[in-house]
Image 1 (cartoon, one colour):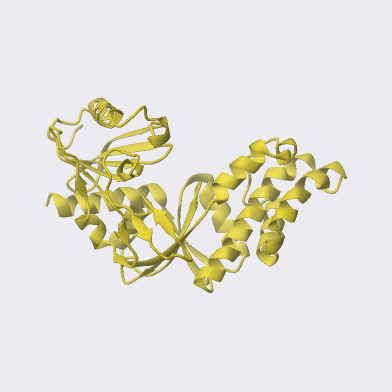
Image 2: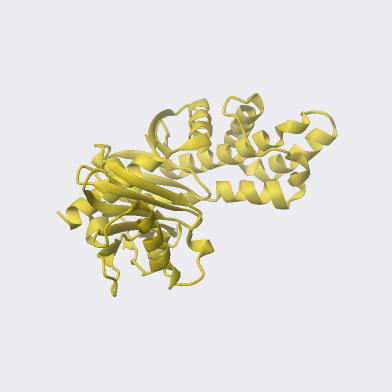
Length: 304
């Protein structure tokens, strides 16, 4: 490291671990990315060991404080950081940070947010920190879509997280493409956002969401009967699922005239294409950048 480090910021998810060493201005001095997510942990005792091993790889000093978001704060994680309740100002996320006791360094874990609505119970962990980063970028109002294994749609007003909804779109795609009859119809799970099969499936998903179980099954016989090419399965499955998700979000939150899309990689292009094809204007926010900025914002408030 050529500059003086201010803190380490960790996004500790279910399947991934991302660590950045940041200076006082939020610049990245060192970075680590691995598959050391919660599902690969061997028990609670593994959290400090994994963290310290990655910090050592970056050359971080033993006194460097660490700010953490994500599943490390879940009940089955390292130390539980209890959920805040909606509606909640995003500033309360920082105030709710929990300190990990018994360590030689100062480690704080940010809480998630719970929606204690009996009609729409829901929880998030990690996405609240992305929104904190968006807020630090002067985006404090609007509807946000955060695609992933479990896609999140969040309504934010004046910096307050008012309501949200989770859609298991990514997990459904994985299960159906690998463990259902559709596995015979999907050779390559990669999908291009401008693929006509993908866009037509998005249209079908948004136009007739009640037919999703039928639309999904049709992917296999369409190939058997020669109505679609063998390589179209992934595009059609992805399109139907994302189109149905968009329709569900529209039913929950109203018109989707403008959507802030927090994503990175191939998913950002797929969702942007699907939303634009459905009539939405999309503003892109890089998921890596906003979660890092959210963690940095929290760290500055805690260790100012």
